Image (cartoon, rainbow, N blue to C red):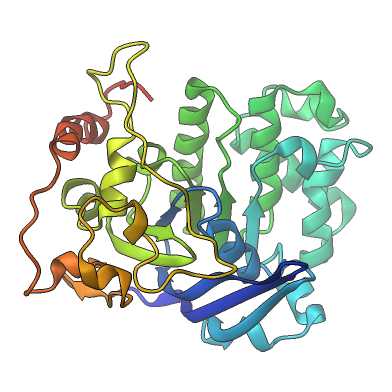
Amino acid sequence: MTENILEVKNLNISFDTFAGKVQAIRGVDFDLKKGETLAIVGESGSGKSVTTRTIMGLLANNGNIDSGEILFKGKDLTKISEKEYQNLRGKDISMIFQDPMTSLDPTMTIGKQVAEGLRKHKKVSKKEAEQEALRLLELVGIPNAAGRLNNYPHQFSGGQRQRIVIAIALVTHPEIVIADEPTTALDVTIQAQILELLKQIQEKIDMSIIFITHDLGVVANVADRVAVMYGGRIVEVGTSDEIFYNPQHPYTWGLLSSMPTLDTNDGESLYAIPGTPPDLLNPPKGDAFAARNAFALAIDFEEEPPYFELSSTHKAATWLLDERAPKVEVPDEIKKRYAYFEEKQRGKEVKA
């Protein structure tokens, strides 16, 4: 079995605000294996970005790691100094941010920006760094890369800028790349190209990827495993097939139901999960999703559910899996989406 390159154990993170302490991350556990793609999905505010930025050592100044461990190759990153993090960040763990225009320096040529990380972490000559920068820009599909090394970010299209950001993240051949909604601002065609590009490069340099998104459809044909986050906690985790074909948590059902299918018509209303995410200034008692859950039991409002294991790779935190709970059928809306994912698996064009 492939060894874990990253393990997050019982991570709890809070933020000090004028209104009080926000308990943003509450007991998060997951692992990442070498060469694997793990997708972390959930609504805005569920804790996806906070978790991964903490892995990068980029937690905001008002953020606190209250407890837990982040083990990278066995070393606890919550206990290292900022200087140690500077040596690790961008070299062993890199990040692709959502908006390339805020990630790129508008006053620096893209050739220098791609080469910068290599010169800092690998101590190579300026010429060697430029040659590697050119190779990476060609690898990510920048047309006439050799002739555009001295161009600035504003001289590229949105899709090309995102490719440049990917090149910057990959230039040091990191062991882990965190992709924070890297395709959200792109149209569907460019989005598909970027996802395919990440898959191809991953195979070439054997890196691990943590892919953050609010859209399950984006990762249907990309992720090996999927972790579903809600209210600062992972509520379900499993292989891609287990999450898409055998979802068990009502929140996962809601996310899947809100996706369009092949049969969705223009102008047709999509399902929306009722209610709003919980206030993490005062986290609700019991299951944080209970107030929005049409299948909630009385115990959901009193006690937080433990994880119930469905297989060695699949677990979900819902009282519906308790042997004493009434049997609930998977909603018809979910069943309708199976054909959608089957089309994705076959690589056919589908509505996004």
